[in-house]
Length: 363
Ligand code: PHE
Image 1: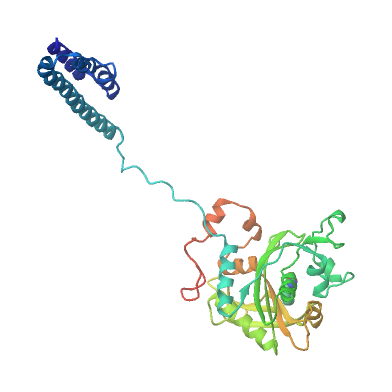
Image 2: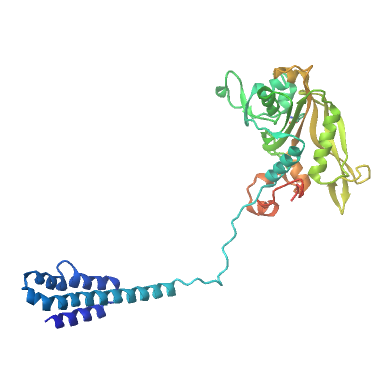
Protein backbone atom coordinates (compact mmCIF):
# COMPACT_ATOMS: atom_id res chain seq x y z
CA UNK A 1 0.00 0.00 0.00
CA UNK A 2 2.84 2.32 0.82
CA UNK A 3 4.55 1.37 -2.40
CA UNK A 4 1.39 2.28 -4.31
CA UNK A 5 1.11 5.63 -2.56
CA UNK A 6 4.72 6.38 -3.41
CA UNK A 7 4.13 5.57 -7.07
CA UNK A 8 0.99 7.73 -7.21
CA UNK A 9 2.70 10.69 -5.60
CA UNK A 10 5.80 10.34 -7.78
CA UNK A 11 3.61 10.29 -10.88
CA UNK A 12 1.74 13.40 -9.68
CA UNK A 13 5.04 15.19 -9.03
CA UNK A 14 6.27 14.25 -12.50
CA UNK A 15 3.04 15.46 -14.07
CA UNK A 16 3.04 18.87 -12.32
CA UNK A 17 3.75 21.42 -15.05
CA UNK A 18 3.82 24.57 -12.96
CA UNK A 19 4.91 25.69 -9.51
CA UNK A 20 1.23 26.03 -8.54
CA UNK A 21 0.40 22.50 -9.64
CA UNK A 22 3.43 21.19 -7.76
CA UNK A 23 2.36 22.99 -4.61
CA UNK A 24 -1.06 21.33 -4.83
CA UNK A 25 0.69 17.92 -4.85
CA UNK A 26 2.83 18.97 -1.87
CA UNK A 27 -0.30 19.87 0.16
CA UNK A 28 -1.93 16.61 -0.88
CA UNK A 29 1.09 14.59 0.33
CA UNK A 30 2.81 16.53 3.09
CA UNK A 31 0.16 19.08 4.15
CA UNK A 32 -1.63 18.91 7.51
CA UNK A 33 -4.10 16.34 6.26
CA UNK A 34 -1.83 14.98 3.51
CA UNK A 35 -1.52 11.27 2.77
CA UNK A 36 2.08 10.95 4.06
CA UNK A 37 1.34 13.10 7.10
CA UNK A 38 -1.58 10.81 7.97
CA UNK A 39 0.73 7.79 7.78
CA UNK A 40 3.20 9.51 10.13
CA UNK A 41 0.35 10.05 12.61
CA UNK A 42 -0.33 6.29 12.74
CA UNK A 43 3.11 5.73 14.31
CA UNK A 44 1.77 7.02 17.66
CA UNK A 45 -0.70 4.19 18.08
CA UNK A 46 1.72 1.40 17.12
CA UNK A 47 3.47 -1.02 19.46
CA UNK A 48 7.20 -0.36 19.85
CA UNK A 49 7.98 -3.43 17.71
CA UNK A 50 5.69 -2.31 14.87
CA UNK A 51 7.09 1.20 15.13
CA UNK A 52 10.62 -0.11 14.77
CA UNK A 53 9.71 -1.59 11.42
CA UNK A 54 7.22 1.01 10.16
CA UNK A 55 8.99 4.14 11.46
CA UNK A 56 11.95 4.05 9.07
CA UNK A 57 9.68 3.08 6.15
CA UNK A 58 7.20 5.94 6.68
CA UNK A 59 9.92 8.49 7.44
CA UNK A 60 11.80 7.23 4.39
CA UNK A 61 8.70 7.76 2.26
CA UNK A 62 8.30 11.28 3.73
CA UNK A 63 11.84 12.33 2.91
CA UNK A 64 11.74 10.68 -0.58
CA UNK A 65 8.60 12.63 -1.47
CA UNK A 66 9.94 15.88 0.03
CA UNK A 67 13.17 15.47 -1.97
CA UNK A 68 11.28 14.71 -5.18
CA UNK A 69 9.13 17.83 -4.73
CA UNK A 70 12.21 19.93 -4.03
CA UNK A 71 13.99 18.65 -7.17
CA UNK A 72 10.92 19.21 -9.29
CA UNK A 73 10.52 22.76 -7.87
CA UNK A 74 14.11 23.61 -8.90
CA UNK A 75 13.52 22.23 -12.37
CA UNK A 76 10.28 24.20 -12.82
CA UNK A 77 11.89 27.44 -11.56
CA UNK A 78 14.77 26.96 -13.99
CA UNK A 79 12.38 26.38 -16.86
CA UNK A 80 10.35 29.46 -15.95
CA UNK A 81 13.46 31.65 -15.78
CA UNK A 82 14.68 30.39 -19.15
CA UNK A 83 11.27 31.15 -20.65
CA UNK A 84 11.25 34.69 -19.17
CA UNK A 85 14.78 35.47 -20.35
CA UNK A 86 13.84 34.36 -23.85
CA UNK A 87 10.87 36.75 -23.95
CA UNK A 88 12.70 39.70 -22.35
CA UNK A 89 15.45 40.22 -24.88
CA UNK A 90 16.80 43.73 -25.46
CA UNK A 91 17.06 44.81 -29.07
CA UNK A 92 20.28 46.80 -29.07
CA UNK A 93 19.81 47.75 -32.71
CA UNK A 94 16.76 49.94 -31.91
CA UNK A 95 17.32 53.72 -32.28
CA UNK A 96 18.19 55.54 -29.04
CA UNK A 97 15.52 57.60 -27.27
CA UNK A 98 15.27 61.28 -28.23
CA UNK A 99 17.57 63.42 -26.12
CA UNK A 100 15.64 65.52 -23.62
CA UNK A 101 14.47 68.72 -25.30
CA UNK A 102 15.29 72.12 -23.91
CA UNK A 103 17.87 74.85 -24.15
CA UNK A 104 18.78 78.13 -22.52
CA UNK A 105 16.91 81.14 -23.95
CA UNK A 106 19.21 83.89 -25.31
CA UNK A 107 17.82 86.32 -22.71
CA UNK A 108 18.77 83.95 -19.88
CA UNK A 109 22.13 83.35 -21.53
CA UNK A 110 22.85 87.10 -21.69
CA UNK A 111 21.72 87.58 -18.07
CA UNK A 112 24.18 84.85 -17.03
CA UNK A 113 26.93 86.53 -19.05
CA UNK A 114 26.19 89.91 -17.42
CA UNK A 115 26.27 88.40 -13.93
CA UNK A 116 29.60 86.76 -14.71
CA UNK A 117 31.17 89.93 -16.12
CA UNK A 118 29.98 92.16 -13.29
CA UNK A 119 30.78 89.62 -10.57
CA UNK A 120 34.38 89.94 -11.72
CA UNK A 121 34.15 93.70 -11.13
CA UNK A 122 32.77 93.19 -7.60
CA UNK A 123 29.05 93.66 -8.34
CA UNK A 124 26.33 91.57 -6.67
CA UNK A 125 23.03 90.72 -8.34
CA UNK A 126 19.97 92.45 -6.81
CA UNK A 127 16.28 91.96 -7.59
CA UNK A 128 13.01 93.78 -6.98
CA UNK A 129 9.31 93.15 -7.56
CA UNK A 130 7.79 93.44 -11.03
CA UNK A 131 4.64 94.93 -9.50
CA UNK A 132 5.82 98.26 -8.15
CA UNK A 133 4.31 101.19 -6.32
CA UNK A 134 4.35 104.77 -7.50
CA UNK A 135 7.02 105.88 -5.02
CA UNK A 136 9.67 103.31 -6.01
CA UNK A 137 9.01 103.42 -9.76
CA UNK A 138 8.69 107.23 -10.06
CA UNK A 139 8.62 109.56 -7.06
CA UNK A 140 11.83 108.44 -5.32
CA UNK A 141 13.55 108.54 -8.72
CA UNK A 142 12.81 112.26 -8.91
CA UNK A 143 9.85 111.82 -11.24
CA UNK A 144 7.07 113.70 -9.44
CA UNK A 145 3.43 113.29 -10.38
CA UNK A 146 3.32 116.12 -12.88
CA UNK A 147 6.55 115.08 -14.57
CA UNK A 148 6.29 114.48 -18.33
CA UNK A 149 8.55 111.38 -17.98
CA UNK A 150 5.60 109.56 -16.43
CA UNK A 151 3.62 109.93 -19.63
CA UNK A 152 6.65 108.87 -21.68
CA UNK A 153 6.83 105.53 -19.91
CA UNK A 154 3.52 104.14 -21.30
CA UNK A 155 2.86 102.63 -17.90
CA UNK A 156 0.57 99.66 -17.27
CA UNK A 157 -1.31 100.85 -14.17
CA UNK A 158 -3.45 98.61 -12.00
CA UNK A 159 -6.96 100.00 -11.46
CA UNK A 160 -7.90 102.49 -8.78
CA UNK A 161 -9.26 99.66 -6.64
CA UNK A 162 -5.78 98.08 -6.63
CA UNK A 163 -4.03 100.86 -4.65
CA UNK A 164 -1.66 99.81 -1.88
CA UNK A 165 -1.19 102.13 1.13
CA UNK A 166 -2.83 104.90 -0.89
CA UNK A 167 -0.37 104.43 -3.74
CA UNK A 168 -1.13 103.54 -7.36
CA UNK A 169 0.40 100.20 -8.36
CA UNK A 170 1.89 99.38 -11.76
CA UNK A 171 4.08 96.96 -13.66
CA UNK A 172 7.54 98.48 -13.27
CA UNK A 173 8.51 100.46 -16.37
CA UNK A 174 12.25 100.07 -15.77
CA UNK A 175 14.67 98.35 -13.38
CA UNK A 176 15.58 101.70 -11.75
CA UNK A 177 13.27 101.10 -8.73
CA UNK A 178 15.77 98.41 -7.71
CA UNK A 179 18.23 101.31 -7.16
CA UNK A 180 15.81 102.71 -4.59
CA UNK A 181 15.15 99.33 -2.95
CA UNK A 182 18.87 98.64 -2.69
CA UNK A 183 19.77 102.07 -1.25
CA UNK A 184 16.98 101.89 1.35
CA UNK A 185 17.84 98.28 2.31
CA UNK A 186 21.61 98.30 2.28
CA UNK A 187 24.42 100.39 3.69
CA UNK A 188 26.83 101.84 1.13
CA UNK A 189 29.24 101.08 -0.43
CA UNK A 190 26.93 99.47 -2.97
CA UNK A 191 27.79 97.74 -6.22
CA UNK A 192 24.91 95.89 -7.83
CA UNK A 193 23.40 94.96 -11.12
CA UNK A 194 19.68 94.22 -11.32
CA UNK A 195 18.55 92.26 -14.36
CA UNK A 196 14.84 91.57 -14.82
CA UNK A 197 11.52 92.01 -16.59
CA UNK A 198 10.10 95.44 -17.30
CA UNK A 199 6.84 96.52 -18.94
CA UNK A 200 5.62 99.30 -21.22
CA UNK A 201 2.59 99.54 -23.45
CA UNK A 202 4.51 99.44 -26.70
CA UNK A 203 4.77 96.87 -29.50
CA UNK A 204 6.62 96.69 -32.85
CA UNK A 205 9.65 94.87 -34.30
CA UNK A 206 11.96 96.32 -31.64
CA UNK A 207 9.51 96.77 -28.74
CA UNK A 208 7.47 94.22 -26.81
CA UNK A 209 5.15 95.07 -23.89
CA UNK A 210 7.36 92.92 -21.65
CA UNK A 211 11.09 93.31 -22.14
CA UNK A 212 14.26 92.98 -20.06
CA UNK A 213 16.61 95.53 -18.61
CA UNK A 214 19.70 95.41 -16.49
CA UNK A 215 20.31 98.19 -14.02
CA UNK A 216 23.72 99.01 -12.62
CA UNK A 217 24.32 101.01 -9.45
CA UNK A 218 27.46 102.06 -7.61
CA UNK A 219 27.27 104.16 -4.44
CA UNK A 220 30.47 104.98 -2.61
CA UNK A 221 32.63 107.97 -1.66
CA UNK A 222 34.28 110.08 -4.37
CA UNK A 223 32.71 108.31 -7.33
CA UNK A 224 32.85 110.28 -10.58
CA UNK A 225 32.06 109.93 -14.27
CA UNK A 226 35.49 108.46 -14.99
CA UNK A 227 34.46 105.42 -12.95
CA UNK A 228 31.24 105.20 -14.94
CA UNK A 229 32.99 105.40 -18.30
CA UNK A 230 35.64 102.82 -17.38
CA UNK A 231 33.04 100.42 -15.98
CA UNK A 232 30.89 100.65 -19.11
CA UNK A 233 33.86 100.23 -21.44
CA UNK A 234 35.11 97.22 -19.51
CA UNK A 235 31.63 95.69 -19.53
CA UNK A 236 30.93 96.26 -23.25
CA UNK A 237 34.34 94.91 -24.28
CA UNK A 238 33.91 91.81 -22.12
CA UNK A 239 30.36 91.29 -23.37
CA UNK A 240 31.13 91.56 -27.09
CA UNK A 241 34.52 89.90 -26.55
CA UNK A 242 36.44 92.50 -28.56
CA UNK A 243 39.02 95.09 -27.60
CA UNK A 244 38.45 97.45 -30.53
CA UNK A 245 35.18 98.79 -29.12
CA UNK A 246 34.66 102.52 -28.77
CA UNK A 247 31.97 104.18 -26.69
CA UNK A 248 30.54 107.65 -27.15
CA UNK A 249 28.86 109.39 -24.22
CA UNK A 250 26.23 111.88 -25.36
CA UNK A 251 24.74 114.45 -22.95
CA UNK A 252 21.17 113.45 -22.19
CA UNK A 253 18.50 113.79 -19.57
CA UNK A 254 17.07 111.39 -16.99
CA UNK A 255 15.35 112.78 -13.89
CA UNK A 256 17.27 110.35 -11.64
CA UNK A 257 20.78 111.12 -12.90
CA UNK A 258 22.64 114.42 -13.13
CA UNK A 259 24.57 114.76 -15.34
CA UNK A 260 23.13 112.10 -17.63
CA UNK A 261 24.65 110.48 -20.67
CA UNK A 262 23.34 108.19 -23.33
CA UNK A 263 25.96 105.72 -24.45
CA UNK A 264 26.51 104.75 -28.08
CA UNK A 265 28.72 101.91 -29.22
CA UNK A 266 30.64 102.06 -32.48
CA UNK A 267 29.87 99.53 -35.21
CA UNK A 268 31.49 98.74 -38.53
CA UNK A 269 30.64 96.65 -41.55
CA UNK A 270 32.21 93.22 -42.06
CA UNK A 271 31.20 90.87 -44.90
CA UNK A 272 28.08 92.95 -45.46
CA UNK A 273 27.03 92.63 -41.80
CA UNK A 274 27.01 95.25 -39.06
CA UNK A 275 29.24 94.19 -36.20
CA UNK A 276 29.85 95.84 -32.85
CA UNK A 277 33.41 97.14 -32.75
CA UNK A 278 35.79 98.35 -35.40
CA UNK A 279 35.99 101.90 -36.72
CA UNK A 280 32.66 103.76 -36.56
CA UNK A 281 34.09 106.72 -38.49
CA UNK A 282 33.95 105.16 -41.94
CA UNK A 283 31.21 105.43 -44.50
CA UNK A 284 29.63 102.10 -43.50
CA UNK A 285 30.33 102.47 -39.80
CA UNK A 286 28.32 104.38 -37.22
CA UNK A 287 26.99 104.60 -33.69
CA UNK A 288 24.27 102.63 -32.00
CA UNK A 289 22.65 103.65 -28.74
CA UNK A 290 22.87 100.89 -26.15
CA UNK A 291 22.23 102.38 -22.74
CA UNK A 292 21.32 105.30 -20.49
CA UNK A 293 23.47 106.37 -17.60
CA UNK A 294 24.62 109.15 -15.33
CA UNK A 295 25.65 110.22 -11.86
CA UNK A 296 22.89 109.41 -9.37
CA UNK A 297 20.91 112.59 -8.70
CA UNK A 298 21.40 114.04 -5.19
CA UNK A 299 17.63 114.07 -4.79
CA UNK A 300 17.50 110.30 -5.32
CA UNK A 301 20.24 109.71 -2.75
CA UNK A 302 18.36 111.94 -0.30
CA UNK A 303 15.03 110.20 -0.96
CA UNK A 304 16.73 106.97 0.13
CA UNK A 305 17.83 108.51 3.44
CA UNK A 306 21.51 108.91 2.55
CA UNK A 307 23.59 112.08 2.74
CA UNK A 308 24.56 113.09 -0.83
CA UNK A 309 27.51 115.09 0.51
CA UNK A 310 29.04 111.81 1.67
CA UNK A 311 27.72 109.29 -0.85
CA UNK A 312 27.78 109.61 -4.62
CA UNK A 313 27.56 107.15 -7.40
CA UNK A 314 26.59 106.29 -10.91
CA UNK A 315 23.81 104.26 -12.45
CA UNK A 316 23.06 102.84 -15.84
CA UNK A 317 20.22 100.99 -17.50
CA UNK A 318 20.41 98.83 -20.57
CA UNK A 319 18.00 96.72 -22.63
CA UNK A 320 19.01 93.06 -22.35
CA UNK A 321 16.99 91.86 -25.33
CA UNK A 322 18.74 94.38 -27.53
CA UNK A 323 22.13 93.24 -26.26
CA UNK A 324 21.18 89.67 -27.16
CA UNK A 325 20.02 90.73 -30.63
CA UNK A 326 23.26 92.60 -31.28
CA UNK A 327 25.52 89.82 -30.04
CA UNK A 328 23.71 86.80 -31.44
CA UNK A 329 22.23 88.25 -34.61
CA UNK A 330 18.45 88.05 -34.21
CA UNK A 331 16.54 90.87 -35.86
CA UNK A 332 12.96 90.58 -34.61
CA UNK A 333 12.44 91.07 -30.89
CA UNK A 334 8.90 89.67 -30.99
CA UNK A 335 10.22 86.19 -31.84
CA UNK A 336 11.95 86.17 -28.42
CA UNK A 337 8.61 85.73 -26.69
CA UNK A 338 6.56 83.76 -29.23
CA UNK A 339 7.47 80.42 -27.67
CA UNK A 340 8.18 78.91 -31.11
CA UNK A 341 10.19 75.72 -30.53
CA UNK A 342 11.96 76.02 -33.89
CA UNK A 343 13.28 79.46 -32.86
CA UNK A 344 14.50 78.35 -29.46
CA UNK A 345 16.09 75.23 -30.93
CA UNK A 346 17.99 77.42 -33.36
CA UNK A 347 18.97 80.30 -31.06
CA UNK A 348 19.01 78.54 -27.66
CA UNK A 349 22.16 77.60 -25.76
CA UNK A 350 23.21 74.33 -24.19
CA UNK A 351 22.55 74.21 -20.46
CA UNK A 352 26.10 72.90 -20.05
CA UNK A 353 27.72 75.97 -21.65
CA UNK A 354 28.01 78.05 -18.50
CA UNK A 355 29.51 81.45 -19.30
CA UNK A 356 32.80 82.06 -17.55
CA UNK A 357 35.34 84.81 -18.02
CA UNK A 358 38.17 82.33 -18.41
CA UNK A 359 36.50 80.19 -21.08
CA UNK A 360 34.73 83.11 -22.78
CA UNK A 361 31.36 84.50 -21.73
CA UNK A 362 29.82 83.97 -25.14
CA UNK A 363 28.71 80.59 -26.40
N1 PHE B 1 15.75 103.75 -16.41
C1 PHE B 1 16.20 104.32 -17.65
C2 PHE B 1 15.29 103.83 -18.78
O1 PHE B 1 14.57 102.89 -18.59
C3 PHE B 1 17.62 103.95 -17.98
C4 PHE B 1 18.61 104.52 -17.00
C5 PHE B 1 18.96 103.82 -15.86
C6 PHE B 1 19.20 105.76 -17.23
C7 PHE B 1 19.89 104.35 -14.97
C8 PHE B 1 20.11 106.28 -16.36
C9 PHE B 1 20.47 105.59 -15.24
O2 PHE B 1 15.29 104.36 -19.86
